[in-house]
Amino acid sequence: MRLNVKNVAFKYASTPVLEDICMEVAPSEVISICGPNGAGKSTLLRCINRILEPTKGSILLDGLEIRSMSMSETARHIGYVPQANSNVFPLTVFDMVLMGRRPHLGWRGSDVDIEKVVEVLRLMKLEDLAMRDHNELSGGQRQKVLIARALAQEPEVLLLDEPTSNLDIKHQLEVMEIVRGLVAKKKISVIMAVHDLNLASRYSDKVILMMNGRVVNAGRGVLTPENIRKVYEVEVEVINNNAGGPYIVPIKRVGPTSYKIRGRS
Picture 1 (spheres, rainbow, N blue to C red):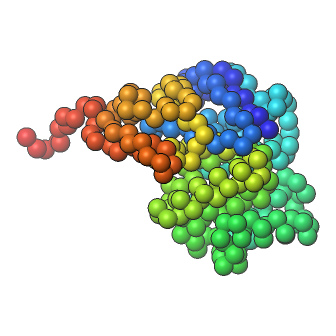
Picture 2 (picture 1 turned 180 degrees about the horizontal axis):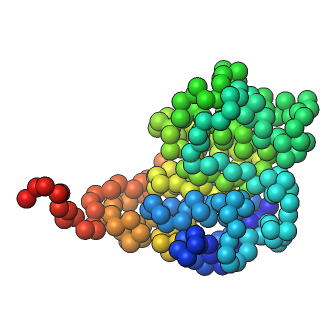
Picture 3 (picture 1 turned 30 degrees about the horizontal axis):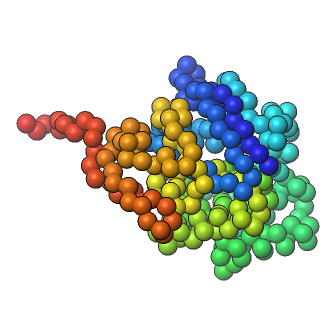
């Protein structure tokens, strides 16, 4: 399924957050959206998932405007994993993941739904936690459960908002390798907002750099010292290697560096 974002804009009250956003995502493609805090990455994902309504522009799935779809139909095509998750009503991990099946068959689970949940739990290495209360898990474990719930929807487009933010380095790599494996096996598309430029470099087919609600660079090979300096105000060294794409090493800030602390001379 091909997703197109055409000239999308969004604002909160009178404050513009997104302006003239255009992007195209092909099947079996991983797109990373990178940029500083406040660039509009999460807002863009919420617009694609219809949590927010763009003030301008259109979002198309295989040429069909998603606003013409029911919310249930949208959920059958698009899975969404938010950046953070507060405590919910006491539910086991199994039941949390089972909720991802609702767009397909309603509240009553069938044998097929149970099998899908078991498959996803095994894929995410969550079988041992299946009967645990979701609220008792660590932040990283809860994040993996949210990804599992989205995968249970069997989406054609998967949106991930900082999917590795609560994970240690081992589990960051594990989750990203699972995502890449799903793209290859299930032929789904993935759009993820991510701060870690090295994860974006290693696991993405394309990178979109955003700043102040706009796309400033997009495509392959955009993580250059010049582009990173422009977007992040940081000087970096980009080391090319054969282990999975360019590796970014931060050197120093190049923005304002003089600060005054109250009460001190």
